[in-house]
Image 1 (cartoon, one colour):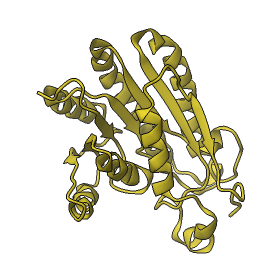
Image 2 (cartoon, rainbow, N blue to C red):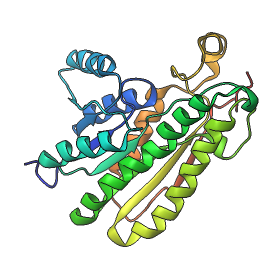
Image 3 (cartoon, rainbow, N blue to C red):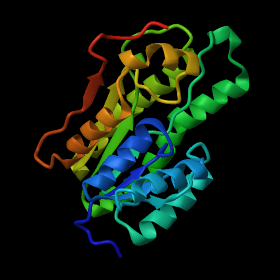
Length: 240
């Protein structure tokens, strides 16, 4: 069994973007990292890159949009580990006007971004309560604070998760569980269409920089909780 004082972090959406960079950064500071994603190839590439630094993560494929898959994965993880931190980084988007979104696209975004995070939290909570504490970090977006056209369903998913976790935070304070929401602005990740990244990448934040901040936040063990943190590029929000 994993020792109770070991820093064990479960990261969803770890095959690319912020999740991938965060998994690498947590591994670099000596945490045990369990990396999940639907894309097994991306997780294998993550370990391949970490091998150059003589580091590795434990790969645990998971489709967070499937509640049954999440239940199975959490059973596997907690059979041998005490999860100290859950980072919900899995997310998808569409850059379309509301009238152009198909019903399937709407379901996919809501099921991944909102329901997927709720599923992981729901399964991890009993273990954190039993263990006397833990940290839940959710990667949200500045769309919870500012409106952007062609992001209606993405915005709905992120605002929904923000509301859920705000209530959750009040309910789990007594269990010494920290609930932290990160609201990043434009970050250079594969979520953005290639043409926008090619044109605007120099103005975007880098996922590696966000990853370093997430590690720092987690490692703060004092009686302090940064409940919501908004991050933007120095130049501000990016207009497509």
